[in-house]
Length: 570
Image 1 (spheres, one colour):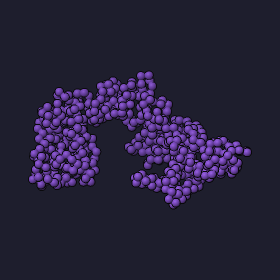
Image 2 (cartoon, one colour):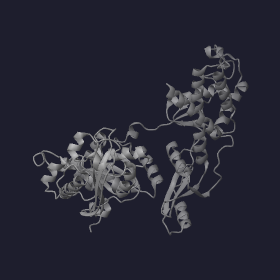
Image 3 (cartoon, helix red, strand yellow):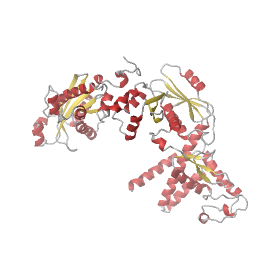
Image 4 (cartoon, one colour):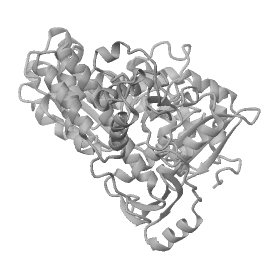
């Protein structure tokens, strides 16, 4: 057997499910018609594997209605024949059991599978969503027009000299389809299609150049990691993650990749590099870092980077709120868009009394003229000397304490105003207030949770790997510093000690997240939040503020429900 990367053909078990080991159920239906109101009158199915017939399933079905004369003429199935047959709700469980775990094959598969799927919905059975292959589609992909002017079952059965002649009866047509299907598989085998995955990828058209480049995935391991497509100048064209590197990268060289930009990328690529990772979290974090480092031309996130917005206080005698990209300590965020940050800013200005104007005001003898905001009671006009720095200080303190999770008074004030607008039937203004308060609460909750994690110098957590082993993450100031696994039977604590000793040194930086990228901290937090995660060690308690916005999540749920009702009612 040739090893991967040695220049030879990959072994079947490395590529996917071998066709010779795949169980197929080739089936056919007869129905009362072709509309959604019609129903099934006959099932016929043949189970095959490795060219051998494993079993057959055949039964007439009482449709509970008369069979149209034209259908009787076509199939020969009459009302008398189905009178004593079982009803569809009794047949479906047996058929679903017969196809369990198999790949479905049918001629014009969309028609037959759609009938069975809708029958399951109608009678309360779960459709198992099996893989489906269509012999019409496969024939059109394999055969030329000269060889097969028609892809009707009767024509293909004659072409391949099927042992059964199709006659519009379900079992006979299914048997004929088996012969056609096996003949088509012989054809695709000659062009190197040996597995179920390759067969499904082969069905749509793929350029020869695209298929030839499949060898670029030959050296990749079947492990989690990050892959990098490189161009002729060694530039990184695209970065992605995968739970199985080889299988994922091979998909770019098949018809399953339909995105025009990525097909263009594959045409330019000359090599695929990879970084093996211990588990999915490490792969996702490395992807983020590689995207930031290389800014690949074919990653949409390179063209539209998720640069967060933050709200911070300016450094002046009468501080105001400012939108920034690089936060300082005590900033509120991150916000996904400038619009969301502006909504939160308006809510904060209303709730805390921080001035909304952008004029720089001196601490002594300000000589400004009050603007319209002062008349609207949205500003105490410190620009005109109506408010001293000491009188203004509580507004600043209110913002700082709210963000730090030491105070919730501003949120309660906004909620009271919302209720007042609603009580006075100013529903439009109440809706605006509700949406702004929702944005503010979400930003506070997320920001406080991210900041709490980033504050911890070192945290080591473990998650079950699904096979009686453990996945580990060493997190320092919100960044992934090391990752590893202890497979089943391996003592976990020595692995933890090794990972901690070899972990990246993380020096805390500035801002609420100690210099860590918000996206990376969010990835780590989601991993830690998943059910089953266990804390192994923590250098200091990982806690959220006592008065954090987490207590407002119930309010958020109700606000979202109210917004959904408004949208539904138009």
